[in-house]
Amino acid sequence: MAKCMALVVAAGRGSRFGGELPKQWRDLGGRPVLRHSLAAFAAHPQVDAVSVVIHPDDRNHYDAAAAGLGLPAPVSGGATRQDSVRLGLEALVGQAPDVVLIHDGARPFVDSGVITRVIAALDRHPGAIPALPVHDTLKRGDGGLIGQTVPRDGLFRAQTPQGFRYAGILAAHRAAAGRELTDDAAVAEQYGLAVALVAGSEDNVKITTAEDLTRAAARFAGAGETRVATGFDVHRFTAGSHVTLCNLQIPHDAGLEGHSDADVALHALTDALLGTISAGDIGRHFPPTDPRWKGCDSAVFLAHAGNLVKARGGQIMFLDLTVICERPKVGPHRAAMAARVAEILDLPQHRVSVKATTTEGLGFTGRREGIAAQAVATVRLP
Ligand code: MG
Image 1 (cartoon, rainbow, N blue to C red):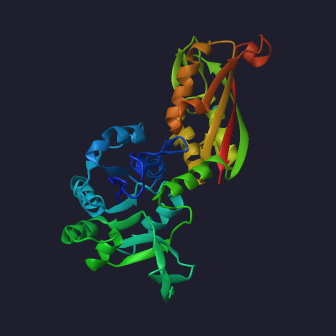
Image 2: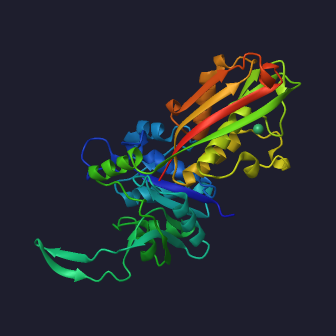
Image 3: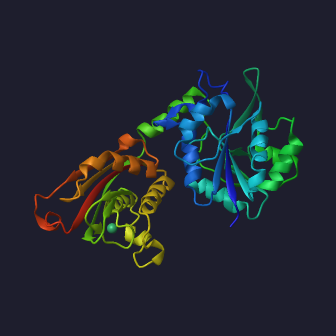
């Protein structure tokens, strides 16, 4: 498979935006604007790595926006967007990607469908961009009056990520250095590269003005549908020295039996998340009969469910987990368990709750035959 890298450009100083903080670092739904697109590319199965171009003064903002995503150090941009892209492309020479997706850091709502369509078109074309047809009638103004009605036939609005075969766009940017072109597709066109149009998304807006940011924030605050779903799981005790709960090894005089690492807590959370998008259960995605999942780290299952929710445009609002057992004592590990779940799903910690209870000596948990876990996931879908 082609090696695909995303190059996210976030070096702008936001002179059109007003206020002192450039738009890519402003808050949107509890995260910096840039974080949303970084997370979208990092979660996409066909994107191998994500590289970001920033203004060197913005390193602190970058570190906050990229925390936990495991990205390489950012590249320092230039005086114009075009310079920044060229410097970003030059910085990838050693990694020699086959294709590169160049994305505006101020387009936080890019979704996996758009990314997939751009990558797919690069099999057949040296370049491809997402775009939408122009439906409004276009007028050219002249001193406050209409000077001319511009035919809109065949006109498209260009979005990002704009994808290119790497060698071609690098050569094109080198050739265009010093000339001012409006986007990377224009750089490719000047160099004679054919650039295909694929379907963009109306949601994939660019945040340019303060009003754009207000509208984007409203999307997080009110729009869409809220789904709540539950998950439940049980694993029985077997010989061992620890149990795995929320990806943490907790010392115990028994282990839990299971095909994977038997992390009963993450299994319940995974099923709850899958439930919010009617995506079946953990056994459908990771069949216990499949040797690939033997001894598997259950964080893989939870991250997969989280990515499926994100791919649907969903936002995980809250996860509540209850672990049911007499022993081991879960209380002392609650905070660390919640923190680990938040880390796996790239969520703020206040969106995860972990609780524990016993069944007062009754039933199978009371007889210390195993551990049960139940989870409730609340997800907002567009
Ligand atoms: Mg299980």
